[in-house]
Image (tube, rainbow, N blue to C red; front, side):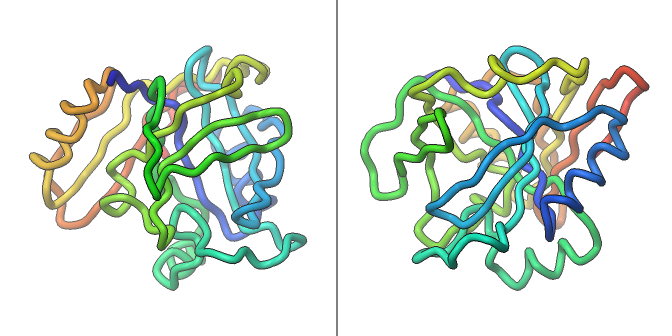
Length: 202
């Protein structure tokens, strides 16, 4: 199994808030995404080049409450309290060719897109968000259809109390990408983006 970075996940209390925050930081427009019926969420997207992208995601107030915990820990009190202070980079997703059938591997869709994704039953972020969820696309991934606004990911920095365990996970995945793992008191993510207007850190 060889893994590469698929996308970064920025969460917000509302999609409008998250989109305004990102567009204000990056000075480029985000593209419309869509709705995720299984989880009652919706998103907007930004190309990071031909192989990766960024999504801002939020609970969709127009959708019915899902019959299971939402992904990315969006239902948890900790995440809700965190997002009161503003949108945040909370997670990342790595792409693999295939995912074997397992209880946490879900077949998902949004519009014309089809994919499988690892989602814990309780919706929690793996290792507080620093360990990637895994995705396998059955249709061309979003970067192939998104406008290129000239934004690129230069590096992703992952802090964790257990850096050796995270490094071992990435080694088992044969992960290829600009990712730095370091020791930190609690899980934390930081991304450095190159934009047409200079470097931006999320």
